[in-house]
Amino acid sequence: MRTGRNNVIDEEPSDTQFRQLLGRYGEPHPPSLPPDLVTRSMRQIPDVLPADLLGRARIARAIALIIAVAAVAAALAGAWALRDPRLAAGVMAGGDGTAGRALLTLQLAAKPILGAVSSLGLALLCVGVAAAIGSAAIVRRVERATQGA
Amino acid sequence: MALIDGALAGDRDAFAQLMHRYAGAVYGLAYRMLGSPQDAEDASQEIFLRVYTHLARFDRARKFSTWLLSIASNYCVDRLRRQRLNWLTLDDVAFTVPSLERGPEGGAIQHEQHAAVRRALQALPEGYRLVTVLRYWHDLSYQEIAQTTGLTESTIKTRLHRARNMMAERLHQDEGDLCEPDATTS
Image 1 (cartoon, each protein chain N blue to C red):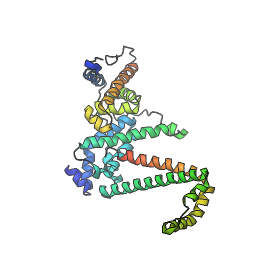
Image 2: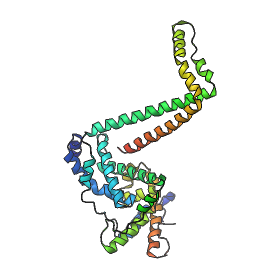
Image 3: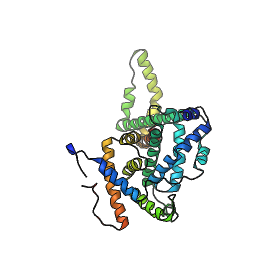
Image 4: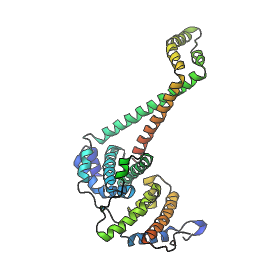
C-alpha cells in the first residue's frame, strides 16, 4: 500500500489490483435472474396506492410509539408505587378552591387505580419494562425498513 | 421518472417495468450478500414490496438506483443480523448444508471460480461485504456508496481496504498458493 501525503491511503492502485484479481476469476459476473422473479414479485404487491400503504405504515409506527410511551409510563408508575405507595396519593392531594376540589375529585377517583398500582408494583414494573423493550424493537424495525426511503 | 409517476398513480404495469429494469441489480446485491439463490429470490421480492410501499417518499433529487440499493442493502444487512440471532433447529441445520447444485453462475470451470469468489465474499463481515459488493459489482463511487449506506467515505475506504486484503488472502488460500499478500497490505 502506498501512502501519499499526510498518510492518506492511495486507493487507486489497490483498487485496480483488486479488480484485476477479480477479473482472473471471471468477476464481476452478474448471476442469472430467475425467469419469473418479477412476475412473482408483482403478485405480492397489494392493489393499493403506494401513498395509502405509506399512510398505513405511519399509523403502525405511531401506534408502536404510543405503546412504547404508555409502557414506559406504566414502568415508571410501577417503580413509583414500589418506592412509596403513599407518594402517589400525596401528589393528588387537593387544596381549597375549584382547582383543589377538582384535584380532590381526581384523587378519590384515582384511589382504586393507585391501590391496584401499589399492589401490582413489581409486576407492573416488569411488564412495563418488557413492553417498552418490545415496542422499542418494533419501532426500530419500522425505522430501519424505511431508512433510505 | 415517468414510470415512478405511473406507479404512484396506481399503474401496476409501470411498477412492473421498474422492477424489470432493476431486478438484476437487486437480485445481484441480494445474492452476493446472502450467498444463496433461494434467499436472494425471497429477499428480492421483499425488497420490491418495500420499494413499492415507500415509493411516495422517494426524493427526486436523488438517483433512483441509489435509493433502491439503499433499501436493498438495509434489508440484506438486517436479514443477516437476524439469521445470526436465530437459534438453529436440527431442521434448519439440514437445510443449511451447502447445495451441490450449481448456483446461477454458469458452466463448470467458471462455476468453481465464481464459487471461490462467493466463499471469499461470504467470509467477510456483512459491513465489509456490502461496501465490497457495491464497489466492485455495482461500480458505485465512494460518494454513491456513502449515500446508499449512510457511512462516511473514510469508513468506506477503510472497510474496502480491509475487505480487499481479506478476500485476496482467502482466494490465494483457495488456490493452494501461499504466496505473500499483495501490495494492498502494508
